[in-house]
Length: 264
Ligand code: MF3
Ligand code: CO
Ligand code: CO
Image (cartoon, rainbow, N blue to C red):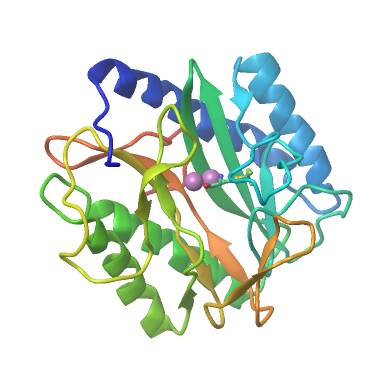
């Protein structure tokens, strides 16, 4: 087993799938408001992907392994202390919530995977700080990417930035290779040591998607078989992009018009 190198034709299709995933987030942004349910956001995104973009929502009926029941919805919506894989439901978003929307499209057989944090009304200063730090952390990871650097450089860049702020880096979930499959090799850890792990080569494509907890790093899984929450019930934030290793560095495949500005 090894990390696949995508051909120019495959890379072009990944660019399309990636941009479309970003554009779903752009589309849904004005609907993320006090009083909306995550089920309503799921339906909006589903219909946009299927009817407007001609995409397949990858999460719908996804099974990562035999022990999981198929994922029942088209997007993941993780609120406050939910770390990832929150299932859309009939609970209304309320003022001060922070919510991650995670979108994965399939277009022409290829996957694009991206997520952002959203503020519902006015969040607390602590919540904003956490979301902003997680965004910077993702970009610190992205910026290490170039041929000849190491996969471990990504995790090191993220962990060494957020832990001094008092935050915890989730260990149980990681970024992943992506292409014709939703989850491929390698596993992209968001913690670790610089200059360790596989060397990066042009044509590799993987996600960087750090989950950062305001408290301790520990997580637990809820009885629905999917939703992951912080063990200490502290807030958690996550951002995700799909990244291509280019000859000179990286290309972010999931950027779109509404992507927040890249940190200085
Ligand atoms: N989009 C998630 C990721 O970034 C995976 C969600 S799996 C699902 O890897 F089944 F919950 F959708
Ligand atoms: Co992902
Ligand atoms: Co994702």
